[in-house]
Image (cartoon, rainbow, N blue to C red; front, side, top):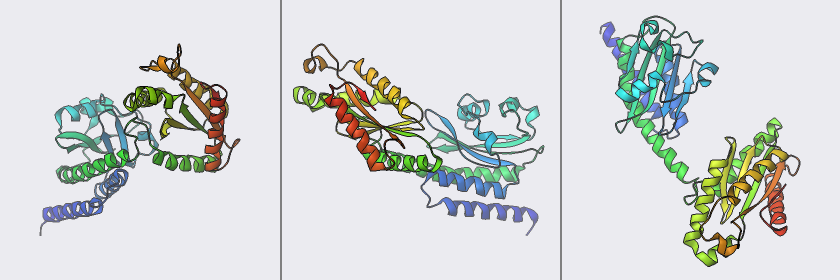
Length: 335
């Protein structure tokens, strides 16, 4: 058996090992973490990364060898490397980046010289990119390209399966009517957020929100129009939330926000902003329920650790504040 056969055998064993490792895995992060780790071991490179491309965003999913530098990069469809691969669906094999059109695509401070970029294609669409690089000139050979080409096919199958699983999992956590997270997701996230707040001594605020006179609105206009109100309010909440906030449909006409690293005063200010956004929005038939006024919301706020230190206490304190807000005349925030 000659040296070429040995190389091919090594590559085939590596591909078989990777395919076996990711074959039954459904979690997208675990699939991508496994892939970059295996590729990094097989190919003598400085770093390996998987960049995933969704309809609305480009994100670094997994990496090894880069660390903080690559995680600070804001990836987008307009980056020359990504734009090229999206438009052509072709791979990039570069031996010396200094002689390439793509030399300015590399983040400043990086010492990349050689690189390979292989598109991950799912149902004829580029869903990701396998990226490897080296500080050496002409560091990669045709055997590396051959390895990654075959691997890209195996990865595309695993990633398609993982993406489908992510969609199914997401559907079980999203309220179908409003588009916000559901109660099941709320219970999971509040537990995690509270544990993190306790561990790192951070503020955490909870908003419990109720649509004022919604039962009356439903009785007068029917559930179909009531659903339209819920859908619109869910959209307004999503449009007005901050990056660190998560919004949920807690049940019926009640919503909630988990506001991480937010003290009581900032939570109250944010709640007032939400209340104002709803009061200034127009809802079909609202004038029948509240003559001369618009549909409104009432909000109760509680904050860890000042109001409560346990999950059930935090919810109860916010619920009690919400009840007081409604009892005091509705359309107000009580913290």
